[in-house]
Image (cartoon, rainbow, N blue to C red; front, side):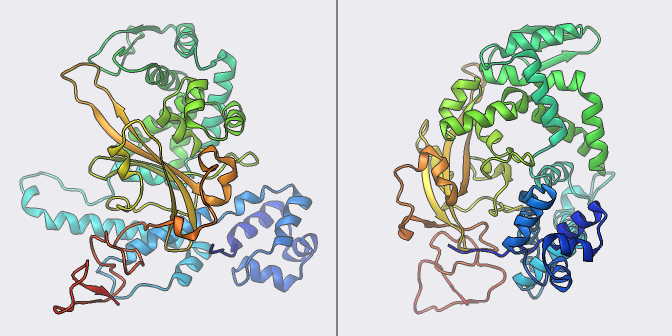
Length: 466
């Protein structure tokens, strides 16, 4: 399995500055030479194991914050942007990693610039469709802006998570009494709750302080919607303060993000961090047992597993994704090195696509990405009924996965042949940046490579990759 050295110069400098130490004093406490510390802070040398241990021993430092997660996200995003034909040559991977580690602000500025360019390019390509409009915007869409906000927050918002956990404990939600418990607390704020309105999933009238929740959905969804409305009514100051820190460009993005924050609060209320993590370890990530214990849906449990990134109490780092039947990613988050493509769908070799063919079953897969990292992947279909014969059923598939080094923590891995390299399917991220040259499911050639066409020797693909 491929390993990667830890370069964390920016975080080392930030830690030293926060502690108010000079390089000389910091080097002494870490028991390294001043030149060695200087090289680490400038990412010319990786952070050694001794330094990691010294940080934990001397300062009680949570060394998990040295994770290269943010840098890896930016590297993946920059690689995908640089695969755009507008760039004649792709930058070496080593350069991208140095940029993401040493100059993250510059990397983000580059990504923002490319987004603006792409929006303009797509707008010009469809100009004939918008000539009749009064106003055209080339800015990043509000939805994409919110998606990136959660993406770079590592999908964990400590203040919101802590507040939800406190609320859950104060009302004694145990997975079976969610509706009564939250409705009772809403009643304390003068809000009356009713079940039965099927025209809307959730309808709240501020004037009469009346909340109606559809009874066409399952109990987990009803509890979730109650907790969502509770957040909007009682946690507005917290949500607005979090939105202020995010500095969204448009009111639309801010409004969408507020929904996301209220959803986050609702999920963390149903699955409070401490109690949830305790049961996760007890049941070894068995989604069905966790779902039954907390009265939550399989999708709610899977999504919550991907948010267990509280400093000092982190869980297994998971990626989580939801795709529709066309393969479009509708939800995505990764606390692992695997980062999903920002444009287009997921790799067709990934088991999440096959979940639609086996409804109600969990599919397991051992997979290896082009960087040599091996993952365990779990997939299952999820259906959302409209509540009546004439209402449409929405069908999705969810995928959850982690590095195989955590296999012992997952009940799903107990009988899998983790030592057999042939058991790992070779998957990619996106065809346009995938480095595999022999993939039989490739849809387009990689933009970083040249292609060769031989009319006399056709293969599975109409070209070979240089």
